[in-house]
Image 1 (cartoon, rainbow, N blue to C red):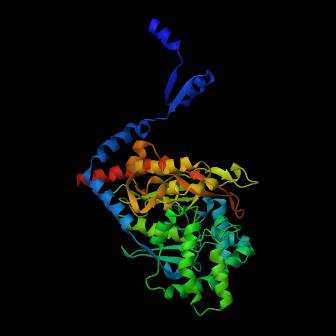
Image 2: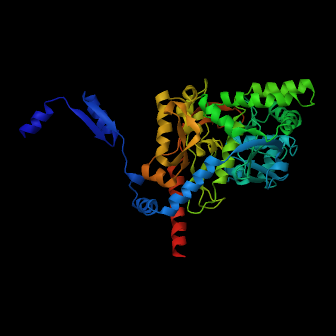
Image 3: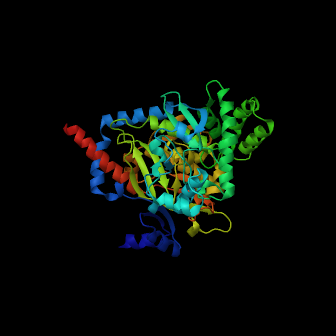
Length: 477
């Protein structure tokens, strides 16, 4: 008893493990408290713990995961063409519209996605006004499908309609292709659900003047433009190639400009094309996304691999796909709200839940995973430089390896974390970090802020249970 009295007569230095309530109470009493955040592996779920214990020791899973990551790292994306979606994308026809995220029907779609589909129908000339476009969308005359199921990706609403020009990215290591639309710039744009005359006119200009000019320029470049090299350089220059693309867009402009000037296109047209790229700092996003897509697609379909090859959101659901499971097998949960900085005049309740295919960048180990090398990004998404570095370091705990092609100077040139492993995510309770823009929940208003978001753990738990069932079935055969 005397020892206890003596103990409590001294100023304590308390280490609090678990719930913060005790820490808060002790701080009110003037105590010096260090909070240690801790939670049991797999949230204490015995079934998940048993699965993790069983799968973690399997050598064939480790070998498969290494192969998946090696394929991602060794992939080499090249921009080789711009063409209309109906000519380039497999399975695309006049009655198909692709969207971001996992599969979703019209009646469940978020406001920005519905607005973008209305805009696409107006742009295609399939409807004369908003009312007719909505009737067509509801009528099932149009087939809706995820971009990701057609080797494509799209930012925010992610809408791709048949006549829209797309970047054509070729993976020269594995021979597969990826596709993404042309970035429209900021303001009122289709990807946020806007569909007024200004938006449609810009899309028509991209189709009729911009795309043919760049297509001609690309034909003069032997071997295309090396997108992998640009990403590698841009990461050393402060981009993470998701929400910050200042350096990458400048590097791309330097590569393409002289070839545009060498075309036989009218000088005024060439000037407009160059001004469009020069004035759009996010142009490169629509190149980094399909570049990451061809790498993750190359890693898909490897038996026994627990590596994530897709993370995508449609504004309602968040979906992931796993290398060792079916190509069209999605594991979904409710899309989360983004936490970050709001633009002036907007409140958190104005924002739509997480939306877009741009998390393909994080799936490949850049974007939020490379924030530690992009300190200026915190001015856009919130937090501190220390936070950004911490996120990049933490992602190594849930990944298979690191990518030497995309090394981060502020982490002593350590390669970015690559190969999200569903086993590690659940075991450690650490979710992938994604930095992203916030869309207004009402179609057409546009971007209202930017911030950070995680996938729902539910996606990974579903995927792990499904993987375990399939793995056990294979062992019984």
